[in-house]
Image 1: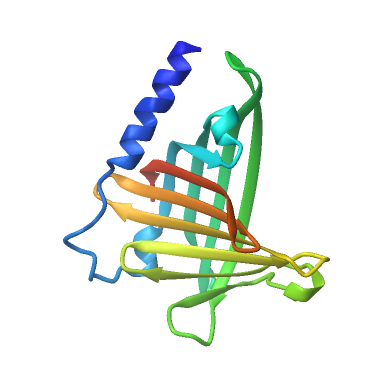
Image 2: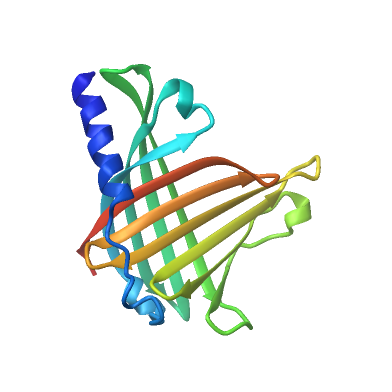
Length: 183
């Protein structure tokens, strides 16, 4: 248990003191700069974190060209619940194909649906060193869930920030650091 606490504290320090591209903030990267496979780890925080602690996660993100657009695939391995020395492990994988929209630099998910029919609407764009992807779902009662993935390139690889907002309230935030393993 003590090793897990030390590992979480060390990872939190690395994430909070990480290198962000400051001198190049005005530079605009192309989508091609994000191509590759990135792997790393991070921590998740939610309202329950105050009571149950932070949870560790492993990440694998692949961005590649697909037709006239791009494909983004990601896997998250969650370690939470169960015995603190032997937590439950779950794997979640997603993939999204995006094509250029009528708006310059904005990509629309191929399978975007009707938000008012409970189907996700997703889009992505590059701003500076960050590839941002949003996914919006309107629930049956009219409330909504917006998920945002910010993937920021730096000299160290990629910084990942995931934010889940439900009706204007942040319900989960995940931060991680990834290194590039392949193009």
